[in-house]
Image (cartoon, rainbow, N blue to C red; front, top):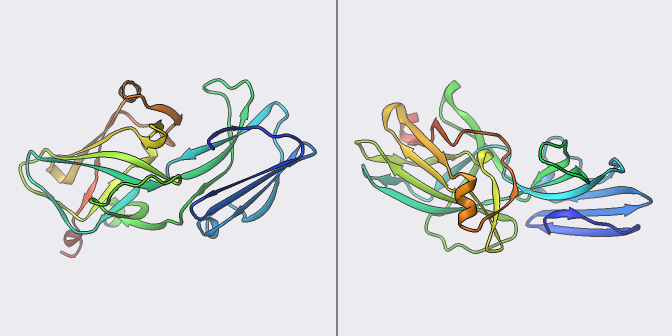
Length: 249
């Protein structure tokens, strides 16, 4: 369902992804787009129901998957401990966003594109990660580390490695996953991101967050289908783990 959309005149298409419903009607050279579902009821900048939209004659429409527009705060079922020198790997499943984009027909990298809407497939609740002015806003998501992975069209997978590079045990109850810096790929007919490694340094609770480069994803047969929302270097230093008992002291 992802990629350029082609319409006869007249024609109507409809998509359903989890709780999001999209209908696009093309008639007399213009588009009417209907958005419905729980995820968009309180979404800023989105008008549920019918919207009439016009794009340049030299442009076309493309339906793109996207990561959420804020970091995700993962909430494990129970606290997690990682001993010094140890690492653990997970495949974290998160809900996609959907973007309808106006794209020049002769598109080249760097060409202007215009999102007509950018909406989640699942309603996400905002939360605060950290304390005071040093915290960050993100979306809260229940993390089930040992659940069996089951493919669903509205989800994407983040291959994640957590490494304790400090000299003390890493305990955490929340993990901030910066999905805005991740690309989306098609891998064996499913959607997943480049690999993320979060190495806990211990000092001032900071971690080194590393993102798999595109050269590596290509070697494992991944095909890029959507670029990251926000650019970032391959390695960044950020606070990524939260032990809630610290906030109570």
